[in-house]
Length: 141
Image 1 (cartoon, rainbow, N blue to C red):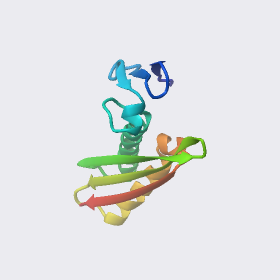
Image 2 (image 1 turned 135 degrees about the horizontal axis):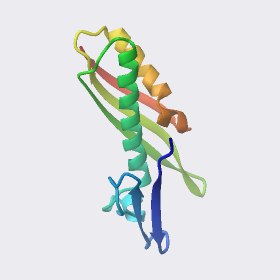
Image 3 (image 1 turned 180 degrees about the vertical axis):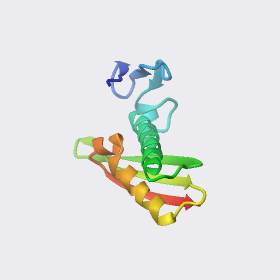
Image 4 (image 1 turned 45 degrees about the vertical axis):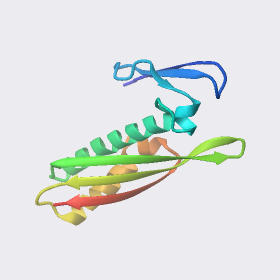
């Protein structure tokens, strides 16, 4: 399977503007730029998109791993906070922190926690990132 995203950019780094699109059309010419990335301005940025992708991937992986262990989550809510740090003359994504709340009625807490660790290590986006990945999880049974 192959999926794609695309970006367009015009102008300099600080005064330029760009747009990001996704194959599915869910993002179509969504604006992004320096102000959105570094100054809290309007538009999206790569780090927020990576966070959304990681949260979505992790949640699906957790659902799969829970299912393989004979459990079904009533709900999984994941927030991925991506850290971008200055690295010499450039920047590096150094960390992603996952905040997860999973509700699995009647489940054994230790079994759910084992599934959480498996999803954290095994989701395809986690495997892609070189950043440190940490997690706080709340399990509701």
